[in-house]
Each structure stands twice: as C-alpha cells, then as structure tokens.
Length: 413
Image 1 (spheres, rainbow, N blue to C red):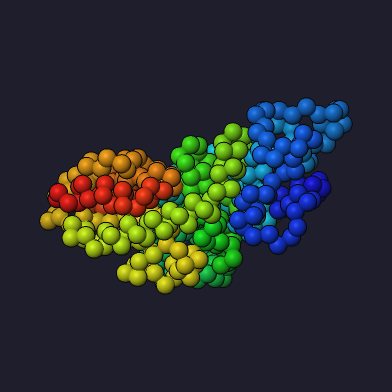
Image 2: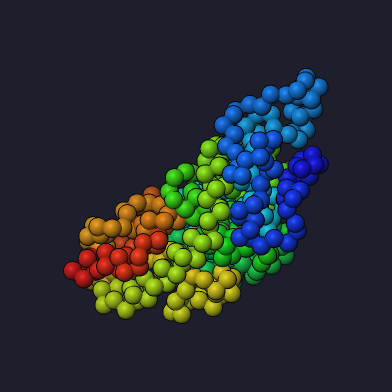
C-alpha cells in the first residue's frame, strides 16, 4: 500500500486484488496485506504502541500520521475493518469508533458548532434523540425532529443555519423508511449534508451513498458483528471528510474502537451477506404469520405489501425487508396493552429477552420500557412507541420454532 493513499484514507485493495470485485468478495478479501508470515486469517494486533526504526522516522510518522505509531491514532486490525467496511459501502474511507452512539457523537463533534441546526427524524433510536435533542443542545446546536416519511416536513424545518440532516432507515423499531435520494437533494440544495444510519440494512441490502447520502453511520454492535459479542461503530464517507473532519476529533477525543473488537467485526463481515439474507427470509415468514394472527393488531415490516413505504423499501433495500419487525398486540387501552405485551414477552422459552438486535439468536423486547424508556411519554407518542408494541429481531433459528414460541403468549391472551 502506498503511503500517500494511506494518508488520504482512500479505499485501497491489497496489490493482488483486481478491480471491480463484488461486495461479497470484498467482505472476505479486503484489508491490509498479510504480514511476512503469510497468515490467511487476518492477524489481531493487540498492541497499544508500535516500535519505530529510528528517531527521524518516528518524528515523520507522528507528524504526518502516515503509519502506525499508537493505537489511539491507528491500528492495523482497526484499519483493516475500516478498509473492508468502506469498500462494502462504496465509500472512499471509513473510521471506526467504540460504539454506534460514539459514531454519532463523532459526527456531531466533527461537523457542528454553536449556532448550527440539525433536522432529524423523530422516529430514530431513543438514544439518538437524546444525543441530538439534549446533549448537543448544551453546546448551542439546535435540532428539529420531523416525520420520517414526510419530505415536506423536512423541507419546512430547514433553516439558513442547517448543517446536517440525519435519518435512520428503516427506523428502530417501527421500520419506517425515508426517501434517501429526496433527502439528499434537499440537504445539498441548502448546503447541508445528509447522514444515514444504515444499521438495519447494512451494505448488503442498502448503500445510501449510491442514493446521494454524504455519510453512512453504523452501530457495528448489531448486524456487522452479528453474534452479540462486541460493541462497535463506524462512519463511512469521502476521504476528505473522514481524514480532515472526523479523524482529528477521534484522535483527540479517543472514542476509538479496540483492536480486538475491530478484529471480531472484521471477521464477522465475511458472513454478513449470508446472515442478512437468511435472517431476512425468516423475518418475512414471521411477519406474514403475525399479520394473520387474531391477537395482533398491526405488523410493521418493510417486506410486507401492507407497509406504507413497501415500494420505496424494496427499491432502496435490494428487494429485501431486513431482519427486524415490530407488532402491536390487541388490547382495550394502554394499561391492558402493556400487560399483554409483557405477557407475550414473558411466555417465550426460545427467544432472548434483550435490548440488542442483529444477533443470530432471535431477540424480543418491549421498546417503550427499554430502548425508548428514557424518553418522555410525549416523545414516545410522537415516535409511535406505544405500550402494546413489541420489537422482534429475527435470528437463524427454524422459523417454526420462532412462531411456536410467540404463540405461547399470543395464543393465551
């Protein structure tokens, strides 16, 4: 790898890889070249510092950051993950962070300053709402939250000081889908940037940069890892943004991804395509089963024709609905709905009751009291998070075992 390309953070394959490889191949082959030992599985570099050959080289490398000196600034395992994820997203570069939320923190710290304005979907993950609406506000950044699906609301919220539009598509947990291209056009017409949280789809199903987005954010803790083992996050975009805007902040603030976690996610990317498609197939089957169930009031899943943005989702997500759905149990009122939802969750014997998603194990959760539990009731209602709502992140178990487990609760309401 030549030093100039490395300094620019540009996507570059090892010399032996030809151009034009498909994402599935890049997910297995992209990364730094093997060491002199010729390992076939990427090496894990558990080192906080790297020995320099002499003082002059050390001075140059620390000044230019063109090579590995200290793992807070760069590490070979982390670099390989960044190269691989960037290639899969069709980005010039990527930067890995400790968690998905730290990736959004890095996004804000790099792009925003006091007096700037953000427009964000009100349907995003609860912690994202808290970060934009509360934490960034402490530093003079104002955020307006709008309908995920109404481009007119996004347009109406724009101001001369708007610097960033932030969308998550599909959203967590209602799987609402936004028109990425329309939001990109809106942002660019106002001199702003569009960042898209692509956690639910991953680059296997959706590549927002190809639809006009400027930045892609990932909670790598979810599908990128895929087995619930480590925390990770990332931003993907142009070499200029990654190297000139975000990397200096990450180097100083230190929300870096550990080499071990990077290596785990790097290896997990090799099976991402297989997992996403198999889990999405299971999810569609479960969604169809739930839609026919008399105890279920409504199912939210982009792969169903009943989903309000079904056609848009199929166009943006490679014709696949993804591996997360949510549904509302039938109940007379909010108190009864919460009781019914808890009943369904508690009667499961196979599914995991946890506040994660993207695992090979199916996970069931009650968003109003977990992922969105720290929001006010007014914020939850605005986001559509009712007491009867249950989120299901479908794994790789046999689909009949998943529906049988749900039936233990739904069949006894």
